[in-house]
Amino acid sequence: MDIDTLLTTTRSVRRKLDLDRPVEPEVLAECLRIAQQAPIAGVFVEEFRWLVVDDQQAKDQLAQLIRSAGEKSQAAYGHLVTPSTLTSGRHLLAVLERIPVYVVACLRGRPAGDNGALTAFYGSAYPAVWSLQLALRARGLGSTIVGYHLGEHESEAAQILGIPTDVTQVAMLAIGYTTTTTFRTATRPPLQEITYYNRWGAMG
Image (cartoon, rainbow, N blue to C red):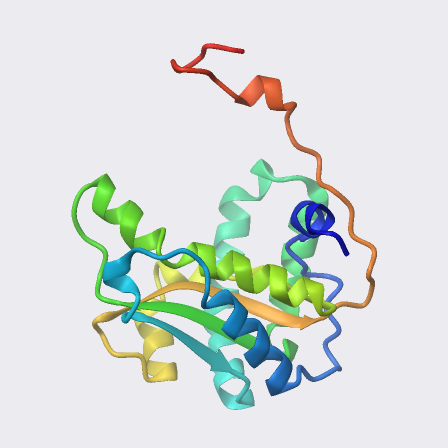
């Protein structure tokens, strides 16, 4: 797969995860090592952590939190997404216990400060999350960010996973092999409609 295809067809995979095929620890570890090389603010290099969750009891407990928050979110905001997105989201909520493995991207510390500080904090984790998704896709695996619970239930998830109170769960990925290798580019607005030059609203 060439790099442009990888970048333009790596999707959030919810309905096409193989729930019966285990993810080999060595394959996941290779992807995590690759994702470690993502850009990160220097002050957070030593503060970043991955937490791999494949224990069934932990997954069962997390599923209850995620499903509770997810159902509320979908009831409140489901009208803002496409029917197919809502359907795939509902499917994911129904099979959370069967996800082969979850990976949580964490940063030591709690986000605080102005927009610059928040940008540095969260911006030091998401490049690694995206790099992990790309590395997974290149090896026949899919992923989707699962974040419903990180508002109302972050502390409860932390208790389940033994995460200290001074550590922020930035993103959780549900991961598994995919049941298809055919993924297409998504529908997006034309570039010329969303790109400005030198001043907000100035088209090229």
